[in-house]
Image 1 (tube, one colour):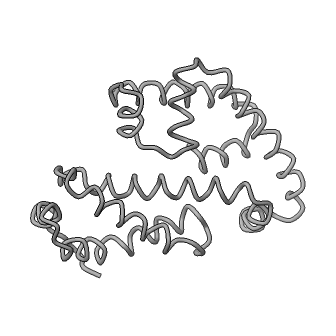
Image 2 (cartoon, rainbow, N blue to C red):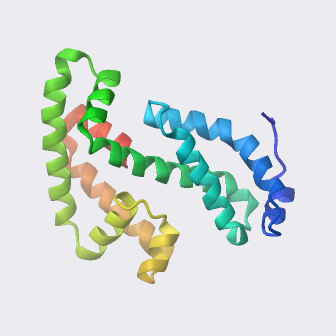
Length: 193
């Protein structure tokens, strides 16, 4: 695992359809992204597939990657969005809810947690529906569909600053509305926001 990487040299080479720089990026970032992914998913199953998709996206968007100073943030944002999509998918499956519950909560609290989770999810869905139409649309594209700010801006033909503004307002509104839900709402926000 390389300790350092020269992004100023590697990134320009990517746009020349040269696969060697992608391999260098993979060797450098894979272990870091793996640990990051594991800290979010808590289980290893599926991480390899997600990370493979990260590097496929890097390759597909290689012509648009110009700023080496923000590349680290860029690759971790792609990973985070894919992880959130995976978490949302898994949380819709009862077996995964039980697996996460076993990892994070003592058995005597698991039934109470399931009830609180269901209540919280219903509350969040209700709050999201109360958002102004444009804000709701942007929030859902970001949090449910996992689109980046740039992708949302392009899709809706608005600026990325407008997207950031609406998401910040939506998240603040949700946090304010969920204050009374305590620890479970913190867990929900850790997973989704």
